[in-house]
Amino acid sequence: MAARKRLYELEDTEFEAEYTRRQMRPVGDEGAGASPSAYPDLDSFFAEGLITEVLYLVKSGKEATVYCCRAGESLGVELVAAKIYRAAEHRNFKNDTIYQEGRVVLNQRTRRAMQKKTEHGREAHFGLWIGHEFEHLKLLHKIGAATPRPFKQADRAILMEYFGDEQQAAPILNRVSLEPAEVRPLFNFAMANIELWLKHNLIHADLSPFNILYQEGQLKIIDFPQAVDPRFNPHAYDLLERDITNLCRYWQRYGLEAQAEQITRRLWTRFQNSQL
Picture 1 (cartoon, rainbow, N blue to C red):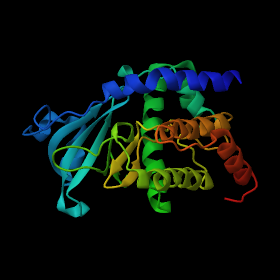
Picture 2 (cartoon, helix red, strand yellow):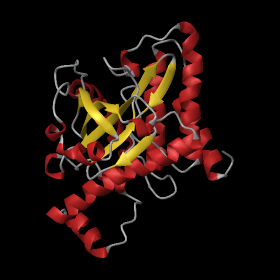
Picture 3 (cartoon, rainbow, N blue to C red):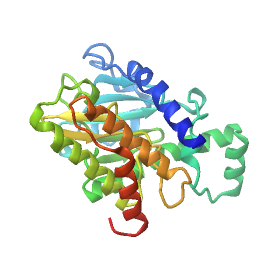
């Protein structure tokens, strides 16, 4: 219960503050017209012809900065998102422990450094954080989840599918007013995605209306670096319940009453019994 209380305390105090840091900027605020050299973390993407131009800054948060970019012809799409993680020395890992439990680091030196939080350990932790999101996105795309398709990972950046247009990104769900006919279908769609992830041994672990995008009547779910494997993380059940509770709270504003505890318990039982 103490761990669960802590999870909800983190959720209640951080969501609104995090969205404030993530406010979308208009074209021209940053990005448009800037030369590729202004974005050294994207050099490899430019060099490979994966992107040709940075159009605008989408959001700048405590974990990463995201830009909308014009895609190169080889990707077969017009726009892509470039997510650049903040350097290790500018990131705060104090709340990461709950997500890291159960993850295996085979290199003993690296594992000790991470435990002691040395400079090498922080850099290794930083690299694993980025690598985990890229691998999670690859899996999610493969199984047909409503998530961005990943294209390429560089040193501390990921290039992925973009939701929006040349003027602005798709809005986050928390800033959208759903039509009555959309309420139940979109709730069921979100729950179906949670079930799909769980079936493939993944829990988002930070899901809320702040990292779900709404585009043309459809939902797209983002931000997976902290996702956990329910087979190994001891907090998996509580993290799953928090994800589901956050979405149930959002849909309550439309009069949809759903019991998060019951949904979580039912999904978890089916997961444990290999019935998903």
